[in-house]
Length: 156
Image (cartoon, rainbow, N blue to C red; front, side, top):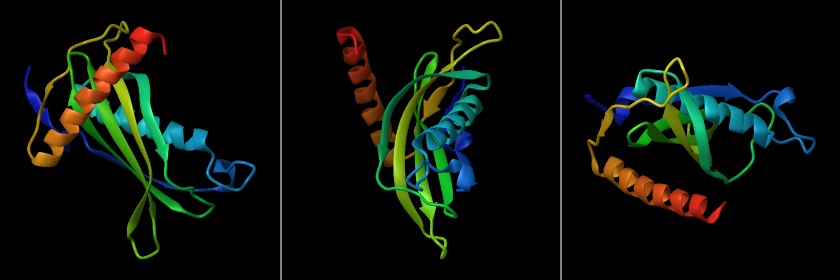
């Protein structure tokens, strides 16, 4: 199976925060953001795998600050690791300022599994790393994978 690069599957989605996206305190509802993150991760993983995928886990979801009505959010997904049938996807969420500058408000790591039409896991292409940042992300993903295995072994 051939390899793909991080660039081959990068995904970007833009959202405008509307009243129906808010929690009772007037901030973006975390569940709404999580749904958008899951979509971006799924598209990124599908682009890499070339088939349907399913979410296996959300490893880390870190809120750095809130978002409010009228804010424009930019979600950027990229693959950080490709295993046999699974992939780790990083999704960064930014609040876009009026001048176009982006401010990071959330980072999440998701594990997606490639599946066939019968819902069985299938092999994914390898990941060709092209620069130091991608290699560092890969190494960190390997460590997160080991931590997930330990937590699973311990029952949480």
